[in-house]
Length: 327
Ligand code: GLV
Ligand code: GLV
Image 1 (cartoon, rainbow, N blue to C red):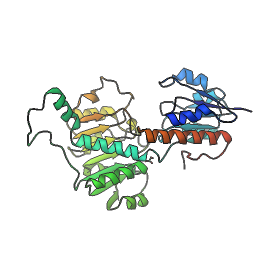
Image 2: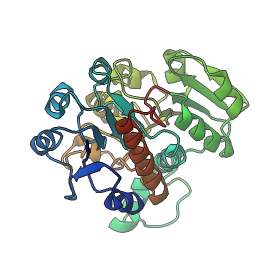
Image 3: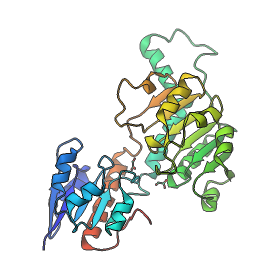
Image 4: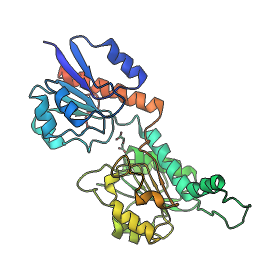
């Protein structure tokens, strides 16, 4: 009996070519418009699917799984984050979940550094000045930012990406890392080397000159950075989030920015995405927002889509996934 694979978007070229060639015994049903599949279309298209290859823009919940039917064996998301997937629902139905870890670590760490440096060196204000005629002369006191030599960096979530961020920052002269997460990670501490300390949130907030959010969004981390947390940070702190917008209580962040409680902010993720153009968040010259491009390099996106295909093919066959979400 033929199997049915539903794919929710056109993939990067090399992976799309693989899909176009087809797989023995598998019918591929693919949404090919260059925009997120509307929910009603998705609910129709998944009917009878044995495997679903989706993106982080698709919500995978009970309604969607019901619409697919009991033959569904695997959901493969082309992302490392899976907060858009209701994992207990999948588990109770014995549906496997595949993700794309590892291959986006370097690209996402690069984006994190990009934001740390851009926020710390006031890139938005600097570029605006050049474009808008605000550049009058060289001045010894104009647009002064901060550098990292001998500074302390707090990392929330010392996973693969957190470690890659720390390694990069070390090259910029950072002396000390504080981190928070579900548990102490001695292997990661050694990999980074030097002073790396597992601390409570209070200490991380109070002592860090730079704070990088590199953790997953879940019930424990949702709105973890609220007004209260921002109020405890150093006044000149550089705060960067490249994980998920929901980890930050955005109204709390806006209030903290309005009251001058934090130095500068760099965000690659927001709530919602896309962020409306009239969001107050965009009015602060010391806040830089990028459109969720953490993993957006051709190399990385191709590697992610290849893994996503491999995961879904294994799941359809009933084999163990190469990259299950709980490895
Ligand atoms: C991107 O945000 C991902 O989770 O892969
Ligand atoms: C994601 O790859 C992480 O574990 O940080």
